Length: 296
Image 1 (spheres, rainbow, N blue to C red):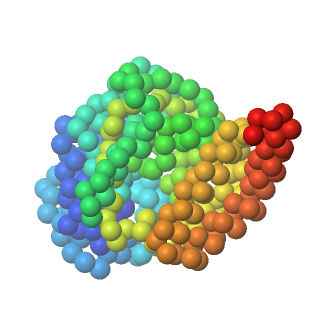
Image 2 (image 1 turned 180 degrees about the vertical axis):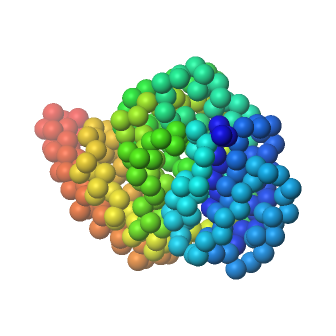
């Protein structure tokens, strides 16, 4: 039985998936399997994957059902102890799995292992890190809500964590109703009540394509509407965490306004006022107090 199962959903990205597969093979780990789930591609994606002569690579073709459905198919087919999810435009950076190995040895009680992610825009070459920690230490272990981890570490996408397959029975699979933020939702359910070992090592790179889903508006808006009310009603959040969530919406509002997408901008503006009315009340109260004491 392999120790690691790397699951890669694929849809019409044959020329890019080789870079992803190569980045995994270059980790130099023998105890692994790579499961590529082709979600009904209509290009020559299958040829790129089948060109590999490596018994560790498994190719599964299914009818198109979306990225969540493809990931769930890969999870069901996986036989490894640890699961690692990549998209077909991601790359594992050198030493990534070695760091996971070190974390697992150092924190044997951890069921989720987290590394950091860099993000590169393929259209203009800009890149930045999904991280706030700057220390070079390896890792620490904690039991915390996903929200607190995400707000402090940008733990978000599937590419920057691996987890024990046994957790699927308790946390469930990817929500096939969601076409965007589905990884955010899954990671939140995964980390809740689990012990996570967290590393500042940059283990993966997300290569954003100009035509990727992140560049569209409607799926993002619909799924965020589905997701944020749920997290605010179920998660025990601090005032500071809620303020940061408000700022996230503010960022999206600014971004869509700048791009001239009035529909999405209106959506975020309405969500801010509906979900964060308490925030505006607090700001009004705070200004009253500051004015009362002649601070402003």
